Length: 128
Image (cartoon, rainbow, N blue to C red; front, side):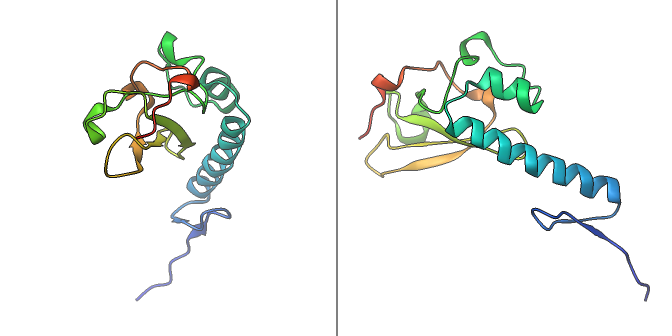
């Protein structure tokens, strides 16, 4: 048996084998917190990407997307209407998208930003 020294992220408490990995984890946790604050304040994905260094490589149509923009994700609940919105930015740079687009009620999941469809104005948000 041997003693093992690990480094713990101050924010999410994940353990890492090196101090550098723990510091990178802490950076990502703080960046995610900041990005979600910007999202909730109505900033666009383009400004969040620039401010937080996500390197998403946004499509032109996604640059002005905010938390109020909505999307059609028909394979989730067979809804051909813009019923889903970005609810959160995740540590890995993906986004949580959720909404109510079908008879089964609210549904959400994480997805890559490049998988989002064409954004629609918040006035078009559909709630089943």
